[in-house]
Amino acid sequence: MALPTFTMKQLMEAGVHFGHHTRRWNPLMTPYVYGVKDKIHIINLNKTAPLLHRALVALEAVAAAGGKILFVATKHQAKDIVKDAAERCGQYYVNNRWLGGMLTNWTTVSQSIRRLKKMENDVANADKLGLTKKEVGVMTKEIEKLRSVFGGILEMHGTPQAMVVIDVPREMNAVREARILDIPTIAICDTNANPEAVDYPVPGNDDAARATQLYCDLFVDAILSGIEKRLGGAAAKKADGDVDAADEMEADLKDKEAKEKSKASVARAERREKKADK
Image 1 (tube, one colour):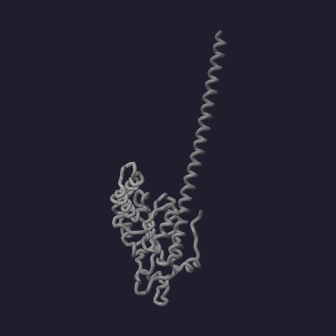
Image 2 (cartoon, rainbow, N blue to C red):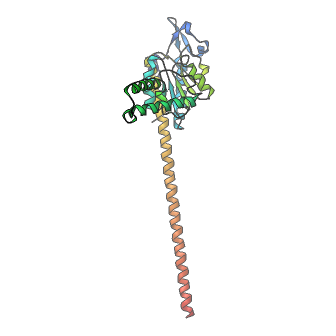
Image 3 (cartoon, rainbow, N blue to C red):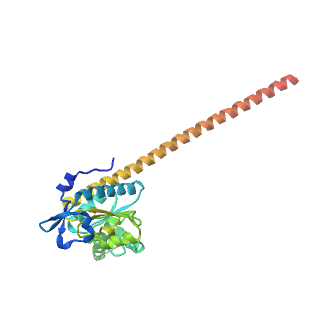
């Protein structure tokens, strides 16, 4: 699987070029703005395309190195798209609420995740544990509450090696925590965003579901491409290891045969000497 490609037509059809109303403008996005139409900023897709490609290359590299990638999007129109994208490529997501310290205070978050898993196990074995219906009901509500926050990172087991963000201003707390921990951030930056707050800004519409779907589809394909490269490299190393082992075994056999021949020659010489003495 190769790195995914896209066309200007796809970007246009998805509405990637539509920015926010001019009154919601961040001056730092000026280099990526083409113009204004009906008081709406129009994003320059000639700037978007190479930056989107760069983001895809970065995601592929992280996945190829075996890194974990966290998708973050808590706005209503993006949360389901992001969840589906993360699950399709075996990665992680936060799509309901960003809890302060979710990355910078991972120890506490891990404790909450362990508590959630324990409660789920207790509810599943309620009869064996002798839990009442009331106790099960209380625990079930608590489980639902915790799952809404931690459901997408239950198996992350530590901070990620990269983070994908759909709306920078909305997810600024997540972006700040990623910066503190030096976690590379790939982010869709609409005309109200600060592109300097992230490592791989991609100028584009962060509201339209169709645009978000396009971004996520490309991100998923890039991650899967990286995973495939990693697995292919591992298979090649294993094959090389098998060849080396075979060569070593062949050398051992030849060495063993040479030793046996040498022993046989010595034995024959000893027998001849004994006969000569007689």
